[in-house]
Image (cartoon, rainbow, N blue to C red; front, side, top):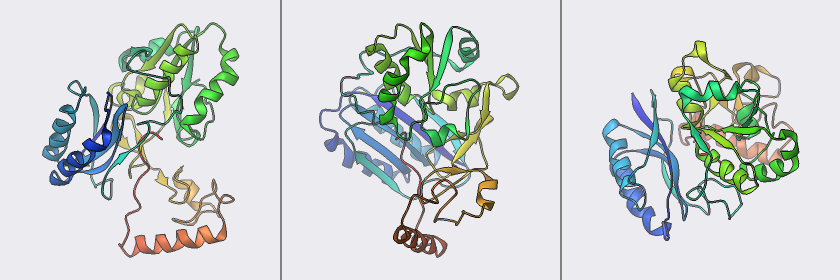
Length: 301
């Protein structure tokens, strides 16, 4: 079994470009694959490899400025979920597009997975899913508000248009691994919301720690690798990825008339030109010939 480590850390990297090559070299030497994003605000990503290989990369990351107390979330995979190793420089490690938001200065109250049910069961708490619409579609907490956003950058505008709906309620938010909530809770505090909470370690920690019989979670959790989804106990779900639009599909979706492997699904049937479809078909032929790995979505877009 391979070890999969999802990590993020908000830390000051004045020159993230200088960190890229040594980090990539460490990953390649360790035989680790995945995607890591570097920005002036820190690091974010998911890697997979042997136990020793992942440990070597984590040791390297902990030696980066401000990362000594790095935490990460681990799971297992029977097969390598990534085709290659990428270390990319970005403007943000999770793109919200609100420069004044600084999770190192002010964030909401962290709530451990074991305490999450008690919080979200309270009538004075509104629960908001901060993930994108395609993620929410395959699973979320019962009663959670779905903003219906296609991109995380849409969240600030959604909140400003909908803040009136929540009155004086306290706000509890969650995301896959915790990183998006670092920014959304900081953003809501800057917008004047007095009490904001977020699920520490995200949905992944909840699915790992909370027994299914006690769960308030329905469905599966989308993850940004070839496993596509995880369920309670970190067991891989049954979803597959549409490699045209990158949305997760349930098994029954692949039996719909609109579905063509690697080319389209019912969700994107009207979204691309025929020239795009031909390009997707050629890519799929390369995949079937073993010439191309389809890859996975990047972490927390």
